[in-house]
Amino acid sequence: MTNYDTLADEALSAIAEAGDLATLDALRPNILGKKAPISSAKSGLGNLDADQRKAAGQAINTARQSIEAAFNERRAGLAATARAAALETERLDLTEFQGVGTTGHLHLVTQARDRLEDVFVGMGYTIAEGPEVETAWYNFEALNIPEWHPARGSFDTIFVNLGEPEEVMLRSHTSPVQIRTMEAQEPPIYIVAPGRTFRTDTADATHLPAFNQIEGLVIDKGITMGDLAGTIDTFVRAFFGEEVKSRLRPSYFPFTEPSAEFDISRADGSWLELGGCGMVHPNVLRNCGIDPDVWQGFAFGFGIDRLAVMRYQLDDMRELVNNDVRFLRQF
Ligand code: PHE
Image (cartoon, rainbow, N blue to C red; front, side, top):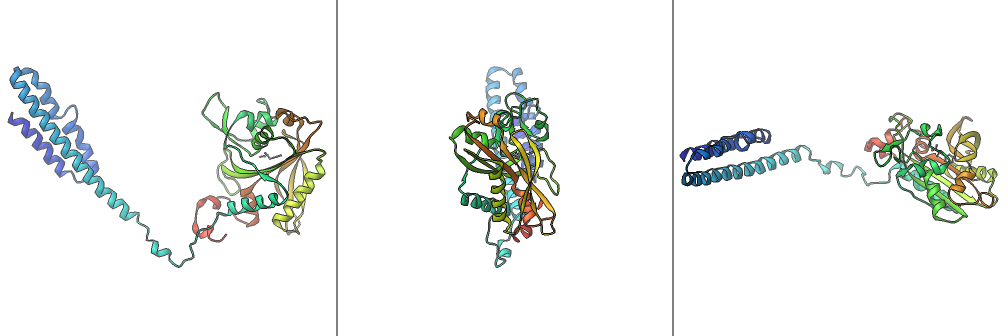
């Protein structure tokens, strides 16, 4: 029976000697695992007679318990030491920031979004929202982009592995909020929907895979392309300044007809593309239970991050998400 005590002694001194978590954990199979001496001793019990077996079995259990207790205690101690060391190396000396003017403020994309919202609320619009994870119906189908439509490919959609293949996705634009709004409320509708959108783009100077858009939707009686052009012009002046002009160029989107891209003028006389727009396609109205013979409307959408890049003349869109305080402090 003495050899069982020895078994525990050896394990206990090995535990005491382990100087760090990795060494201790590496020890575990040898002292407590299936092949550990304490376990093999147990399998040897069958050779003993009943009385001896009982006593030996108890001795082995006691030995195992003392090894386990010592192991757990040592492990807790070493873990606490490791954590304290990690905390020390990761410590931030906050007194370094004192007097550097580090009161927090809103991120410049948030500032841009807030200002956009203000401009549109000032024009009588309300703010609408929708989910970031969408179904094919809202992101595509209801927007007149059936499954076979080549435009689906152009959205570089990030799909979520849920339900049927390509059925659930991170929204690739804010246009699904048009559908959700028209489903939920009767016209007349005047909304803007800002929010995060996602595409498979690799981040570079002019793209981010997670970016922000703002969508506008107007549904009312007798709405024309002239109202769309006037609205964009009013918003561009309010946001960029009275001297900035806007123009529409013919384009194509499945959910608007006619469709256009809109540009704003730069100081040097050149034009810069800002977003897409057009008259809401009758199929889209019908998909939402709205009679296109009674109601008409326009929609527009553009990137808020791009807008911030333009407004603050940033060299690289990735600065927006790098979280470098030296950059962020400037805005
Ligand atoms: N959803 C379009 C895009 O992301 C932009 C758009 C919105 C175009 C509304 C027309 C009308 O490219």
